[in-house]
Image (cartoon, rainbow, N blue to C red; front, side):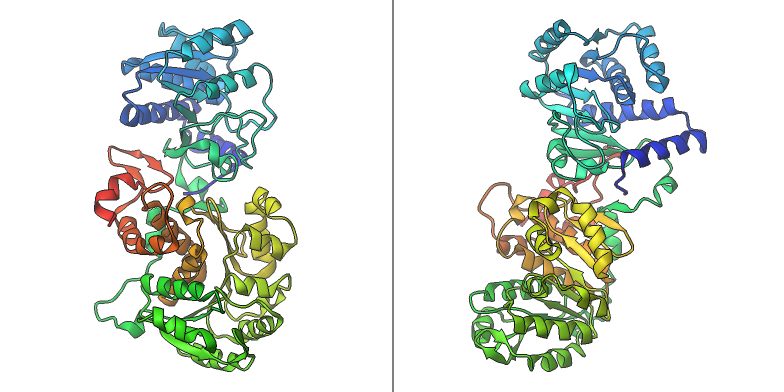
Length: 536
């Protein structure tokens, strides 16, 4: 499933109508059907519905939904923000049909109308927001701003049509005032603004409604939303005659005094990810602590120049061991001094293995990223926003405001795959392709979570996945494990690790579609319905 801009969606709509001959009015009818279907299947107890329809096609979708919900027996109050006869195109067709059917409508164009609208909200169960669509790109003002404020002040559940009104469909920026939705039923494909902060925080649960646009029209779109079927397709088979040596050998270089936990979590994650053998190479002085904690990992002592600092001579040991492994992870808990930077540069240039670089490795590289272009295999980098900010010389706030742009640009500059961690993690490659991962929640915002992700990605590479697929699959499964945790506070990285097995099981059983309506798909996997089968 692709994630698209407003302009791309307009072009795709136009091609559907002009090239494929599918009438625009039918597209609008289908969009309204999807909204009505979601309400009928998930919100049917909310009988008193207020629908606010704006002046464009988004308003037309709302008019269709109003007509269908009235026929289904709901008590619907439709409010249009334009006078009768002023809609254009497909919205005009649907307004005319609605009025000719003798169905009731109220107009909301003045302050007096607004007061009546607010009174109506006091008796409603649900608001359907079809006020502004994906074409909105200027700050909201006037009566429109007052309507949005009234919606938010009502504290009623809100379902937004295509995108919450007041959210920029391309950037996720808020246009002064914006609706806070509980659900957003978007059409054909999610819009970028639904995936990017702060718009994503306004969207609530995102449901994609299939409105019969040909899939071929989305093929050239560069940003993909990760879904269970796609992630499942990345995993190689595990043959019946497999043994530990054939299921992936992982080599990890990690750890320093006070940071043994990072190395341990990375190694445990690689095992839980499915690798048959995991080797952890660490400074000699911390190996007794590591060996006391790990019983299934082979520990390799590395010589030190000072306690906890790996000596440059260790490069030969690491490179020699790499000859018999399938993937290499460097960085969790690693000392970040000059000697480490020299060691890291040598390993990057000479290692025969695909690599995942995280934490201490990223800090040791600093702003000198040219070495990455000398790697024999395209590395995977896993920075959080603060680490990315240091690497590119800007603030973390600036990174967060331009996540997709920065991840795409620097994947090309550095010739690597980048996982820019955070809400809706972004995965990019040098070819200009990007993926957005919808899994995960605030439970992953805990020490050691990133170390788990590093181990999981490295494990997937060792098992035979190309590095870019492994980066996507690692982010998805790791996030899914977080989603499987009970809601609320009190979770640690070990709790996330303990859910990996259930995450694999949930991934196998889940495709995100509603059982009673295959035309509606959740952006996040359907966890609740799987809980009895997947949660330990």
